[in-house]
Image: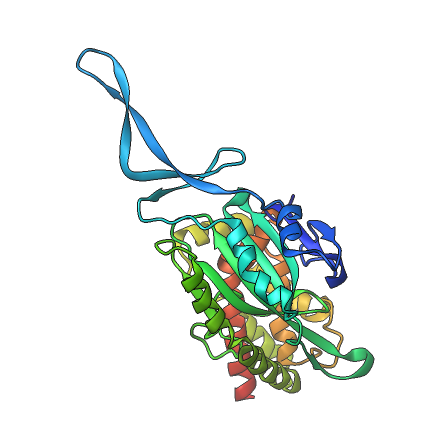
Length: 341
């Protein structure tokens, strides 16, 4: 599959995903069935690592590497990473077990689940049923839905994360960086984001902590609805939007990210994408977006989610990499520009 999507399932009634990948499932799909259909019904384990050592008698024997382990997907023996003795695996079914209570209670609906980069990143996304809001009215209404995203990286250095995100329905843009940005555009970390390093087990106590944190989800989406309403009511002329696009791209990049930019697209190419999206992206013809800061914001998020970068890497970048940083900065700057208007 393109977009580095190894496997994926999505609820057909929710519409085709933004990257147009995966297997459509029925609206009544259970949490357990979603685990299987999405191709995530596999486990991981830590395995000892060895290296050949030359003995005085000329023979060779294997010696164990102390405090280092191969992190292996049991279904196909693929090595996902190397980890230390303190690293605690989190199984895919534990992610789905976390969602189960919300889904059974009727608060959420499983939307998508899948695997990126050969199993190194696992996600599950559930729609919060009463978390939607609408800008405008009638045939030109502009709806945004709220989602709970659980991200489980089978990688050292990444945290298990549960966070609130929002999706503009008309174009499936993930409005903000789902894994940490405040949805009101004020900067800083998201107050409705739960993170857990792999030094902890995702046990009942940690799940309770996550549930308490995510109890603030409705406050988070309410804050974003006010922000979106404000952005949709403030006009933005062409010169202001051009300055905004330039500012969005003024991000300090690591050497790896600079190399990625050089091999994918130049800054001018990105600016061209933003300008084109401002005029032609889905939903830009709506009164809420046409010539407003909400439209400028969505030009950036649409470009990141659908246009910028290599097809096989776009989804990962939009959630975890440079694309997520661009979207986070875009929201913060859109608020600043609108408030200064």
